[in-house]
Length: 348
Image (tube, rainbow, N blue to C red; front, side):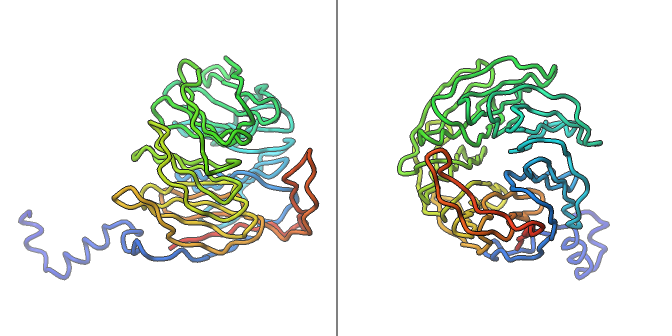
């Protein structure tokens, strides 16, 4: 201890050290999540994936024909990136300069400036580009196309398509380990593919059984774990290096998104059909247990977690009756009451 600190009274030194700790340090790891705020955003249209830009304090929400940008400090709408057709997701580069939007209706990927929110380029993709991903080691953008069953690969330096990769089924969400591997769920094959971002080849295919019909996918890069949420109320947890099934805990129905909060050893699943959020916790021994089943709202099927604060966001609206399923559209969703769209904010 320095002479300067030795001269400080003990009670003053304790206060100084306490003030220097991050705000989340005082929160018990066993503290439950609670609903803190409901942001009434309104507007018409369905929604899809959400993404948090922690440094800019912005929550991006894919909202049918536009992307809504919401200030996470105030809950107010900042602006919208509009004139789109059917948005699915948003991805960011690693430098904080640009973002990428998958417009499934137009079959395109849009590059936008994260400072001005202006569109910089529009790039053709396959049919119904859904998940969109920035891979940092090769600086390539991947979009996984649900109707054409392929992946479009874009060089981020030139914004040109460099490859189209056939997929053995309908691709869903994707993640990267930051070390050159890309992983993607195959919904109608109940499997995860591993792709090499440099050679653009499929290097592994791993079954998800007992999980069936995967959609959302998350990754814990430190512990090499993949978390795939499935239609049959299961989360398939795999080793991202070997593909070995580690666990298959039960989650709620209608899960469409999975997120990892690695700082707090938590894994989240947003379950739209049960109106819940399943929160799992990993142990030091490699096991997984249910930490909390959090009530949300019917339709709250996608979500995002701010890694800098641990705050969790999900969205929904007032819904009408659910229409019957059809062979062409087995996942028909109920009508949305205009103007009822809200964002739920959960924290500990």
